[in-house]
Figure 1 (cartoon, rainbow, N blue to C red):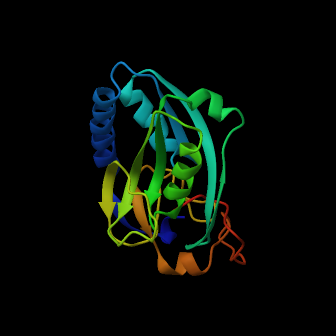
Figure 2 (cartoon, one colour):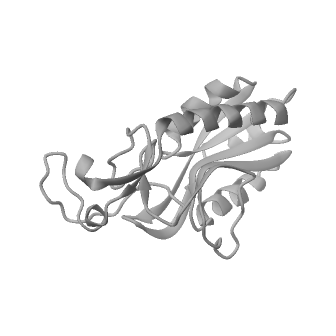
Length: 199
């Protein structure tokens, strides 16, 4: 696994400090209100766990599926909201939490679906945002953990074909790993469609 991971872009100590800062920001923003946190699975799961503990405010937690990547390339965005979400969020503030803002299409698709359910407001927080022009119709996040260069990254919840989510840092993926994923035992695998939700 280590051979497939390139430069460490954001070490674990920097992540921890920034997550605490974001937790304080959210505590101030939503003071006195019970927000619904809508987490885009699966990439933000580690970020989510650390953030809600640093935040400590009143909240409901729901999960949304948004799949947009095939390997390292963005594909069509498919959003699935949980049943009964409309009743829960009507008239309440919603925070959409995602791992990475790349083209912006995933965040835009999720926010559009949520806004149709008539919440009081919809804001968005992403762990990472790439330094590139947002795609057409993109919905920019209200808060960003870190800005990064336009590279395919893994770790701290972000994966490549299901691998590397458990790394405690954010790192670039080696080019050869992008082209030819391998099994945990080291054997080469044929490329198969990825089910992760990046965007």
